[in-house]
Length: 113
Length: 113
Image 1 (tube, helix red, strand yellow):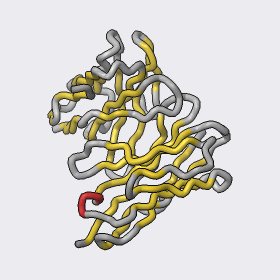
Image 2 (tube, helix red, strand yellow; image 1 turned 90 degrees about the vertical axis):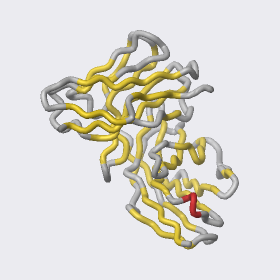
Image 3 (cartoon, each protein chain N blue to C red; image 1 turned 180 degrees about the vertical axis):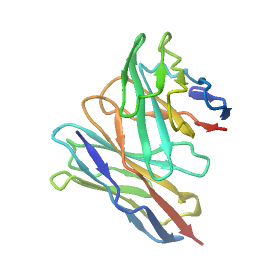
Image 4 (tube, rainbow over the protein chains, first blue to last red; image 1 turned 120 degrees about the vertical axis):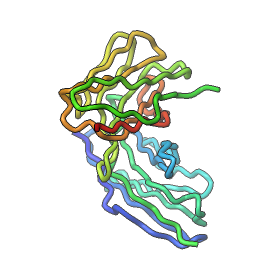
C-alpha cells in the first residue's frame, strides 16, 4: 500500500523569505502523480502544484516549485517570496493507478510579518 | 459557475440519529469522493465512486453509507453505527483518468451533541 509522510507538523517563515516543506512517499508503482494542496483557514482545499512522475523536470507555478526526487521518493514544495496569504495547512498527496488520492497528515505554515 | 457544493455547512446531530450530507457537482466529472478530516490526521478516504450506481469503500468506511444514483450527486449518510462522527467532511470530484487533480467542495462540519 502507498503511504505519504510529511515530517514537519508545523513550519514558520518570515514574509518575503523562502520556505521548503518536505514530503516523502512509498510506492511500488512506476507511473503516478504527486500533488500539493493548500487549505487556508476557510478550509477550502486548493491545488497548488502537480507533478507527473514520468517527467524529470520539476513543476513550477509562479512562486511555488517542487523538488521531485523519484529515486529517493521525495517531493518537497518550495515557496519563494512568502506572503501572508500563504499561511495555511499544506497537504502532499499521491495519485496512483486506483485513481484516488492518498494524503499526508499536513504541515501548518505560519508566515510572520 | 461550475463547481462542487456541499450542504449544510454546519450540522448537529443527536447520538443515535442517522444524518445525510449532500454533495453536488456540475463539472461533469465521473468520479466523486468523500473524505473525513480530523485534527492532525490529514484527509482519510471514506468512499469513492467512479461511475453511477457503483462505489467502493475507502480506508474508513465503517459506519458510513453512500449512493450514486446520478452523476452529479454523491450523498453520504453517517449512521448511528459510526462511533465518533464529529469531524469535518469534504467531498471531491475528478475526471476519471489517473493523474487528474481532485476538486473539493467547501466541506461540512458535523457535530454530535
